[in-house]
Length: 328
Image 1 (tube, rainbow, N blue to C red):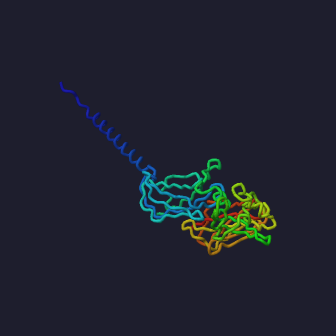
Image 2 (cartoon, rainbow, N blue to C red):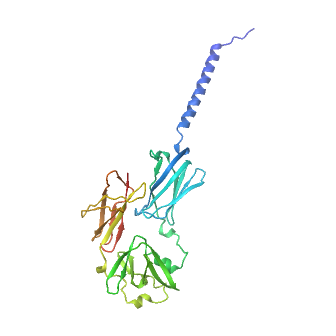
Image 3 (spheres, rainbow, N blue to C red):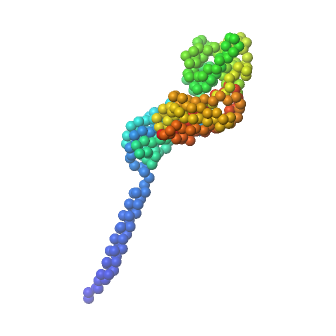
C-alpha cells in the first residue's frame, strides 16, 4: 500500500526554512552595521589640542601624550608646550587607537579615539583636563638635595618674586627660568633668568604676603643668613605693585598666538587687544572675582575649555594667568 505524500506540507516547510535563513542573514547584517566605529581602522593626519589643570584651568606644560594601537603598541608620542598645547602631524592609519595623557603628580587619562571627531581634512582636536593628585598622595622629587628642591618650589615659571634692593625699594621679577645652586654645603643662591640673587633679599608669595626666602629655609641653612641680613620677614605692602591678570590668545589647532582679539574685563570695564605675540594684561587693585570675555578676530571663534572667572585673593602683588583658545 503506497503512502500518500503531502506536497503542500513540504513546500510550506521549505518556505519557512528559507524565511528563517533570510531573517538570520538580515540580523547579522544589522549587527555588522551597528558595530561601533571605534573598532575600525581609520586615517588620522594630525591630532592636536590643549591640556589644562581641572581645578585652576591653567595650561599644563610637559604633559606626556602617547598614542597606542588597539593592542597597546605605542605608535606616537609628544609633549605640551608652555600654553598646554600639543600637536602630532601625519599620524597615519590606526586600528582601535587610544590616547593617554600623563604628568607627574596628576591623575592620568587614557581613552579611545573616536573617528566621529575627525574633521573634513582627517584631523582631530582633543582637549582635556587633568586632575591633580591629592596633596597627601603626591610623590616628592628627591633627586637632589632637600634645600635646593625646597627653594625651587617657590620659583614657578610664569610667576613672580620680589628682590629687595639696597635703597629700600623692591623690584618685581617675572620668572622665566629658575634654579637653586648649592655653592657650598647647606648654602645656596638663586639663579633666575640667568641672573644670581641673594636668598636673603628674595621675597616669595605666601598667602597674600611676600616672605623672605632665607627665613623660610633657615632650618636647612648652615649659617643664620636671615638673622644677619637684618631684613624683614615680610616685604612691606607699600612696595608691592598692583596685581595683574594676564594671558595669551592661542589658535587651538596650531598652537600659534592670535593677534587682534578683543579681551574684555567686565567690571570695572576695561578692554585690551592681543598683540602680535597673542598676549594681553590687566592691572587690578582690589580683591574679588573678575570676569573675562573675548571677541575673537575675524574668521575665529572661541573654544570654551577654560574658566574665564579669575579669583583675586589679594589686591597687590599677585599674578594671575588666564588663556583664551580660539579656532578658525
